[in-house]
Image (cartoon, helix red, strand yellow):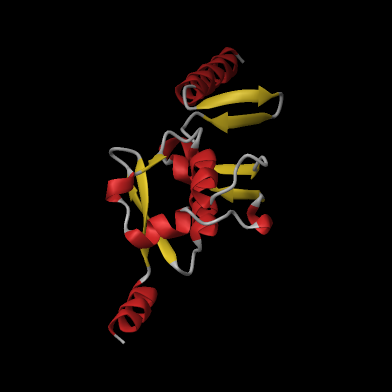
Length: 149
């Protein structure tokens, strides 16, 4: 009987020790729920965070909308001298009414919607937390052909 009690006590101690090893990677949020202690996807890459925004009437251009959309991400648009003429042209256009209420989308998807996902692709500099846009190759060919002819 004494040996059985020792075995039970030893197994309780071992399970308790095993629980404390894992305790540093988990946080109890309720009686039966835990969450892992690790960064979220958005914390690792702010452009993958979800957000939703209703742009105010003061936001008139796509450039203003892009800057508002980036406001709390830590990212910003590259300076004007680093933008292509095509990018400057789209950013100076008026924000379409359909885009005034945007999301929920990832930051990246929202930026692509604002400038036209089929026409431009997003270029990111994660080191300096800067974003820019490049005209997709399909449209580069179309506009170069028009410029020649």
